Image 1 (cartoon, one colour):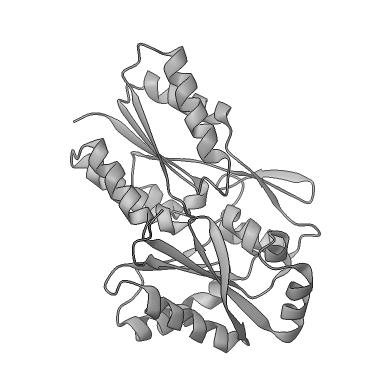
Image 2 (image 1 turned 90 degrees about the vertical axis):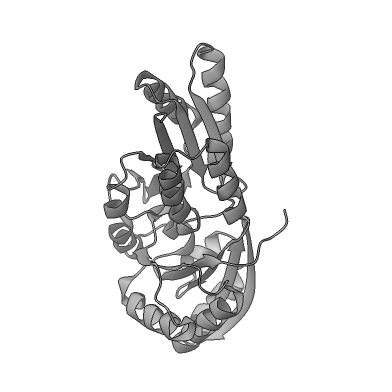
Length: 290
């Protein structure tokens, strides 16, 4: 069996306690700036501590893509370790230059190391958070079983054409910055208690529902999940504030008849664009044509 690494980035939102159990998974982390200070996700804080910081921040956070240089360092390190296969599963390529940086680094590596036998495969998840983090775990398992890389890549591409994200935010200050809600609508939404519900699929966000009041947000999110999920497939609940976890878990379980595969805290890079009061439902829907 060849020696392999499954590389991914911190926007996959894999909980640390889960990632630590998989020695073949490596995570490269995003940089975040807030109120004039620079941080590295998963190094300086986890998602929960970051959201605490974000609630008290004067300004809004910005994230920096993982650079070609950082990927090049990773690839050279793996080559020295005798790794034969590298699989990088990336954040949505249209939402971040990170995927392009990885491709550029792979090309540079092969140019500068023509004698290396190490292969590098890069898969664009076209998504965020556990929509690809969950499948990084599956890819690791498949490679551990000796499945060929081509089969693993085909599996990932098929799943990433099916994964969907429903997202809402209970405060719109940060999400307004992303452009998904204009300033006037965001201010009115906060004043009137109106919460937009988005789909975030293939890097494109669309407001598909507006709910007034916190209770109606949960009802609408769960109803949309039930109408869109392929029943019986795993689903995940991501929260930026733990206070939403039990309510969503109970409502989703009641509606679908089975519990989520995981309730997790949304990571720093995701919360930088959604705010510290966001909730995401991640699930498998009908396959989309690209």
